[in-house]
Length: 291
Image 1 (tube, rainbow, N blue to C red):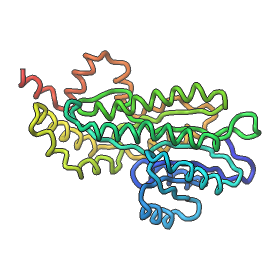
Image 2 (image 1 turned 90 degrees about the vertical axis):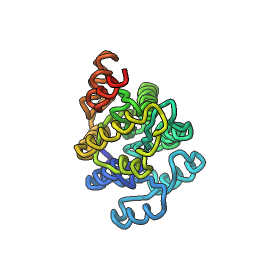
Image 3 (image 1 turned 120 degrees about the vertical axis):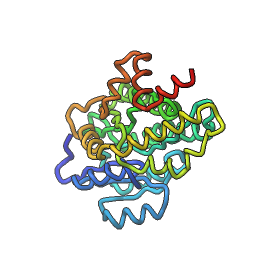
């Protein structure tokens, strides 16, 4: 999918202040894209604009704040000055874990507001700037950053996984409906990637939560297991390569599974997957001891 002669390609990427979003933005900038990147804080916008220069345009808003979207879209449209977007990358997301019986509903609702409803609202708002077939230019692409949790559900990640399953379903719906305009939509499904998402959760002191519930011991083990997985997390490069393929390939994939558990979660029977995930997380011993 090539831009017109002399026309700089442009992409909107949400959640670029750190982690995967930061890596995606940097990768696209290195390849000559103009990147419109969303951040929630003005200080982050100033720091990134200083670091990346004029090819980066910060968009200061929260993806869950739908009231800000008309202003943000108008800002992007003005800078584009008649160009279309080559891509919209919905990366902004939050992950908050806990037992479904006890996790605060406010946390669960917040995850859905950002991971699902926010992604859909942003997509609807920017869709006109992606163009459509029959205009002399190839329309832009939509890339939604999902997770291995969109293909499988681990204990204590039920709410987060539900939000990613929902994002997967929305992407499939968009992909099929937007054939009308020739717009492709893909999901990228990473596992543990080196980023600050785990550090942000640790800042909330999760080990101190749920200590007065029946899940106390398994919750502690869950976090020990997560810490081990985070220590062996993959480089963000695996995600940036997938995003680039989804944007630039003549025939992008509908899904980009980047962790073996994506396949295991879809192919194994539920009972077999239970045994596997409990063993991997070190929960099998705890469950046997409670019988």
